[in-house]
Length: 511
Image (cartoon, rainbow, N blue to C red; front, side):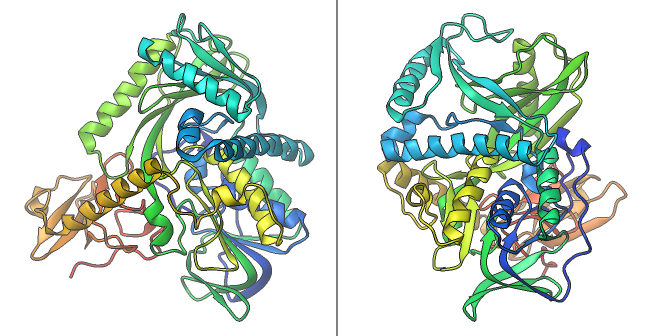
């Protein structure tokens, strides 16, 4: 749930976000409230509206904005974290549930875009997982064996990936994958929701969602409120939970770019390599002469990379792509997004910890398009009081079920603890006088820390460096020109306004 925008602009943002009515005012009533208008929120709203429920959707910023507009939009039923790793850590049934949910999500997108006549460039494609090096061939063999045990159909091993620069590299081919234009699809869902009576409000930041009087009451910044029987929180990182869910997932920043390629020079397929961090590639159709190549990768923990490292990562990403796609033209757009990595590799979809009528969808592990649509399917059943086969595996209240998951849980929370201790470390620059125009830095002032940003005009913006969610010390993001919380993924504009949750309130003025 983004308000406004970060600095970069994705390929999908060439299409305007759906216009929303003025922000919510007064008090309204509905059967279901959905907070967040990305792919998960809109999918849940659509499924529940189709089931005959009255629905209100609220978003802090524009409709169909946020991280769903910053994806590379692979519709994949392969597993980013590998099926052999899922089977090893969580068992066959959990891996089967993951696979079944992502297959169902692709099928559901295909069915909805047909039923609603949404022109979103949907296409069924093959996906190819290819070895980044000779040493990764064994990984492909382990993955193929795991796929066969899980019941993944349409997967086979090939001796050479059909990629311009990957001849002779072994790969696994996954049939039945897909691609689409996410902004066009989400705008189509919004049109269908409005046709069927749903009420959608942009620029309506929610500050609390609580159970009361046998239902749920949500309050917006500014005083507006919604009363409902149940609420779905689909805000990338949940804004209703101060801590519980956030201890079980970690924010990561990912990068992508778009560049033209001659029509027919690159196969229309999905490609992923086995590097760590891995690279992922797809095409977006443009015209009769050329397509757009979309390349992503170089992920890192949010708030853990400075200007030099970010620049190097983007340069590496382009250099990698040019090695595989020699016909690639000049890069037209570069953007970044944020994904949430669950400690046990499965998303959190279901009833929120400690609540009976508040549900969440988060922890997509970089597969947000399919995970978000699967969330809509599962949440429809749970909100309507029905059982579902995926519910136990994706339950947000679950605890680490393996040594690997517990180890990852401990590692991420130790990192959060270390970031909390950053309150007592020195600042990055000694004073605001050392801050050049167009840059931000953390400055120590007495016992506290200040987030300082100097605009190109010379105007200075000073705020407390403590995230208003849980108090972690912020880090300046020089690529997106915003403040990032390295603990739970909140983002703030240079003027202190919230760009992305779980934070609700803007940065405080310095003490």
